[in-house]
Image 1 (tube, helix red, strand yellow):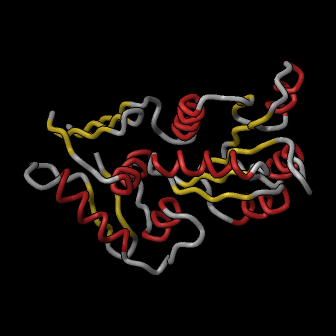
Image 2 (cartoon, rainbow, N blue to C red):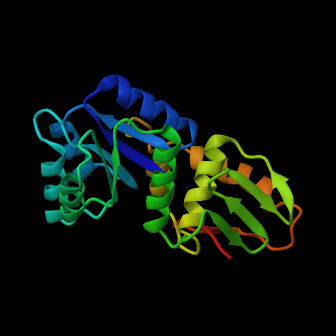
Length: 222
């Protein structure tokens, strides 16, 4: 999954970026509102973590402009303002959640996971596809009760496919949601990862879960 962070406090933005990347997410960062608005409108994201107090263009203005333009990407507001009035204003302007500073990183991750699930067909952190079980909170995968060891990127790819189960996902779409804006979209890395995941979750099992749709992409079916 690909997350956009819009935060002008560079040290905080970099800490959040590093922590989220360690969870297997692709992360883009903007350090002012103008850059953040441009990236939110033009780069594919699954979630936006948006500070309210930003230079050039403030977070509330960004949020309102995105919603007016029909951009439905989930938005988690970050702010030092913690009054009920501030929270109501943010939620009424189109935010999906609200987290006040200072916050624990564990809570931030939990809220990110909840918002990503809300925007997909997945309603729980525990996802079952046939005898494949994905624990999105613990980043653990089992098939037939057997633990499956995946790298961070392999897990991220499988999780994204699980959240879009039974949908054909193009290589470009998978790449855009797995890597940040600087990655080469012409790379064959997705095919490499798909083969690795297949060897781990399909080989030795009767029912194949990952399917190639010729000329279109891949699908996790079940």
